[in-house]
Length: 215
Image (cartoon, rainbow, N blue to C red; front, side, top):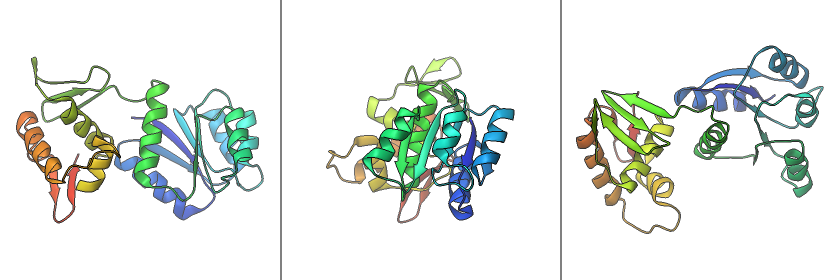
């Protein structure tokens, strides 16, 4: 997956971000102040930088002014319109205000990496290959027929792999906010995906909660 630099001076928040990024397959370097972030970013290539604005010694905005072309997502408590505009005018790819949901962060990271073509275009497990750009699934040389909604659900599971997702959250992420179906819909689609992909041991049931794609 991607090489990501996490620049956050609060260690607990930095650990939370890095641990969740690692769960879904990314590699992270954690930095806690502006000058060190600038030094590390200049010496090592990263696919993405997640950076707080209020950093010791050198603010995230000041670091951004001296960075090269590396995509940046600001993570900050500064939620005023002026701060957002300043962040985007400096070239930020996204701006997320604290507090934020982990799944939202992962989705935003995935979106930026996809736009910058730094994200994996395929995913393979147990003999099954998933192509995100083509929206196809295959086993060996044979195409697996799945519906568009099954693919949406599959992509959500893959992008949030190793993270337990409730049925309600899966409905929200795969069906959208305007879908009012019952959670039984998720169960039915999960059963079909398990059978079609031979992922009975990969898509785990989480008792009284939902599901997790475990890799």
